[in-house]
Figure 1 (cartoon, protein in one colour):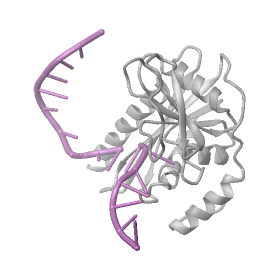
Figure 2: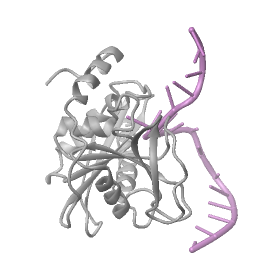
Figure 3: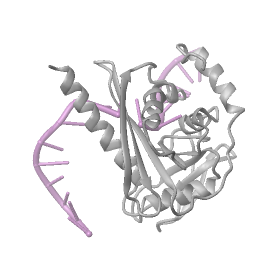
Length: 226
DNA sequence: GCGACAG
DNA sequence: ATCTTGTCGC
């Protein structure tokens, strides 16, 4: 396993290498599947980053398992290179899961990335597992407003290229931006996102991972302060 | 050329 | 991401 890139030049080269390994197609989830949500929280002052992985039963939306992992911040925030900042602790948290996820939903992008290798794609290749990205903002991409009903969607475009979908997960709420990561198709990734966002704008996986990593970060800081 | 830009 | 109170609404 190659060392984690330390410079932007190394990171760009690593993206080029991983991009050739991505499979942006794959089947829909079935009942009985487990979907993992991952997210991270930072304290750059204290050089601490904490990741959380929450495994959810796709059919019932109940939490099956939760893990966290803490570590030092190993890469600065550079738009386009987010994966190098977020993935080290995420890989640790996923590795602590006792069950293997059938899909991992990330907070951010996959194919919808300036260089076509967002953190969801990156994580998919590193783990070999199906992944997709669900982002809260359109980044640099364009889209027409999707219809008003839950389930309505419109193409997310990078110029003329379709890189994902703006998906309305709840009526009267801003859309989320779904893009494929690895080993799942775009329509299938959107279906999974919609199914997990039955009540709120963001899928339960993302919501639970978000709150868990914040709590875990607070715990770590509390512990270090004494 | 410069700035903006997922989290 | 993070700094941050109360408040409107279901």
